[in-house]
Image (cartoon, rainbow, N blue to C red; front, side, top):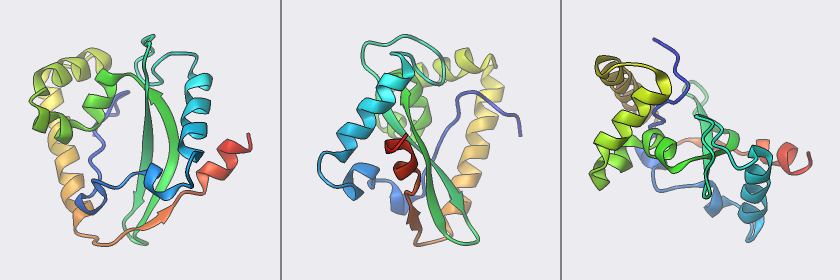
Amino acid sequence: MKEYKLNFELVPDGCWADNLRTHLPKGVWDILRRKVYAKSGGKCEICGASARYLDAHEKWSYDENNRIQKLEKVMAVCRPCHEVIHINRTFLKGDEVKASEHFMKVNGCNYAEYRRAMGEANERHKRLNEVGEWLLDVSWIDGFLND
């Protein structure tokens, strides 16, 4: 599997509508995301583009054996990168063409490589959906906020 700078992050279906904001005390999400934006210097942490508005993206890892969904970091990303990361949501909005073009541009790849990466992401997504319930590990937040 080829490593790309910008990747699809298909979360398990049971976690799809869930996000970090729903698990944090009121106001903590805003503190966290503002700190992320400040550290990024107004640039997307994936493609490096300067952006007036950035999104705070939650990067998760999944330990299938122990059923743990772990927050690895929150990062500042531009809207086009975020659309690629959450490609299934982007499909629902009808914006796949722009997202595919952005994926290929950022990663310096062609359409066949884009489709192959999509297939690999879908296979992983299918496997993650077989796990069922995930335990949540958000311990990263403590270190980041105390940094």
